[in-house]
Amino acid sequence: MPPELDFGSVHVGAVVEGSFRVTDANMVRISSAPSWIEIVYSNPESRNPSGSGLVGVRVDTSTPGDLGGAIVVETDAGDLTVPVSARVLDSTPRLDVLVYSSPFSEGSTTNPNAFSTLQRFVEEAEVNVSYVLREDWNRVSDSLESFDVIILDERGLFSMSQSRIKSYVRSGGYLVVFASYFFRGSVDEANQLAGEFGLTFKDEEETGWVSADRLADHWLMEGVSTVRLLRPTPV
Image (cartoon, rainbow, N blue to C red; front, side, top):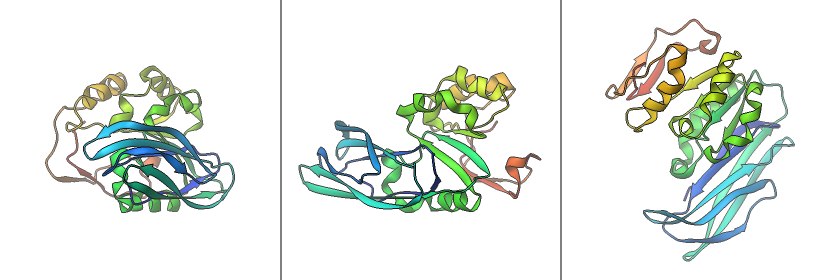
């Protein structure tokens, strides 16, 4: 169970989704949630090593404001409370970015401080980010051209439409793909996608942290001097 689900700063109209697991108990139902939270799915039967329950949520970003509240989950061990928050901005962003799938998902949300750097970067860079659950690809697949950049993680690689993404790139869109030797099968998926554009991922990894300072001369890298990666997969 995450101690907190904080989406940071997002913009009006962004798709903002996340999910969490119920641990150390068995979920019965959602007792209550803020009016600006939509429960995308609620599965009490979803098993995990220390309990059961999986909940997906979506933030209403139709109006600006500082949103705060809590989702209350009824379990066989009593009620569990998950604070949830987001700051919805009504300003003109520099970039529209789709992150698929949402990093605020399942086990990744156990540490609310894990995304503090991401949240600070998004706000300072004036980026309009949509965080989409991997179960919700169809929600955005018809509107990919509205995004300047699409970021695909390993899980997203298995859930999106390759033909749709390739069409987006051919039309001039920018795509950032993450694949890793550790996430078995993701390198093969990435190569099916990126191979058509002249890139090949190797199904291996470097050990530890690796820093790169010979970066492409591209507007996406403006202001970036070094990229630091943990156990990266060579390309």
